[in-house]
Image 1 (cartoon, each protein chain N blue to C red):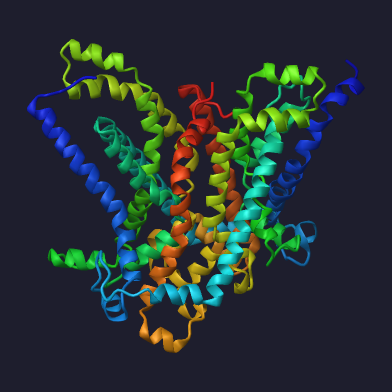
Image 2 (spheres, each protein chain N blue to C red; image 1 turned 90 degrees about the vertical axis):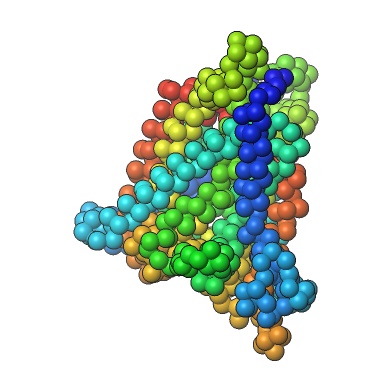
Length: 299
Length: 293
């Protein structure tokens, strides 16, 4: 087949892919080129190409800042706690839902617990700011039990806990879906055979149900590695305040404040590039592990 | 079906039903509380007397919110964003996924193209360079800033591509032999056979556009251009109720809290409306993304 013959049939395929290519070039690759600002003394007037190069200076300055260690450890602590809480919670909820025999009941519960996932952090944040305020309903409720009211969002003792539990509220229900799908794929014959052999309900959960979802657990554990630098930017930007920067300021919120509020583009660009680089490595590693140990491929 | 009839098993069932019910109710209580506050009068709402049922029932908070010019303007921007943004997303997802779903024999260069997209998904230029690019393109304060940067949701392209790959090859081959072009094959075979996947991705795209607020915050320098969720942020999070533009005399009769609650509920309603459809589709959507081969 000559090139001309091939193109006679295949040209529409190339036309179809062009718009997507242009958008991705412009809005994904051009910003990738823009990471050069991390090595420049960038000024918007001179642009990516005209700003003077200063080598690693921004990074040297960044690593000398006391905030750097803080935002890095806050990011890791919050994101890892969230991943663990979310996955463990989802597995337990999925197992309990799977044991509930009434289909209508199960569906109703699922409908209710998936809902917060689809609401924005502005809506959920607005709700949280209200119910967690000094005179809010949560403090009223624990006050009625004789417990002292707390500044859930304004104190460094509570902020991370509030972020982790509100993240749990938004996402745990939705995270059960994957496990529930894996649970329905377990062959019921296995359960029947075990029951005939005299295995009780909890032995069957332990020896059949849990091993049945083990590949899914391994897969999600591997994939979650790609998320350890994502502590929840929109959530924290909505909930935090200067009083809790010590425990709640993460890489993303820092980049936003330094770069877009104070317009220190190069410094923020350096933090962002640092995160992008490690994030890229983590995602590649997570996909490799997912392929190696769970046979998962996105392509 | 196995029946476990011993007392311990029954006790567990009882505990299980109670626990799941409590958990689901706990997930919803915050929403119900805000809903009750939004329907309450000034004194009980401000004083914090409302729990899960309105006190001094009134619809005036909603009347004020829906009568606020600034709120309605942001609502209109959000609606425009959802309609144009979702359409653009879906056109590009389908057009991009179709060639990528072909084998490298049919679509030469597929391997290079696929890595072009996958790398763009995995490596992120970051917030600051992205912002500078959007600004240098002159998109600040335009609808374009909200819909163009994420016009190609690459993960959705990959899901769509995997779905297209499961369409039986025989249909396409016979159509091509009969002289149909790839345009016709896409339009008359692939799209009709992929409607569930398209519906799923459309709903997800629409929900994402409706919920997005951070891009509005950074790309709109004039608050008059804020989409609704960004507008709500100034009202709810920074507690700047003057933005709503309600007449100060009216505001005196009402509670700030209740007005904020009413706005939160108004922002939630569209999600509740599409939620039954979402739920029907998103499970298949998740499976679309799960284990391939």
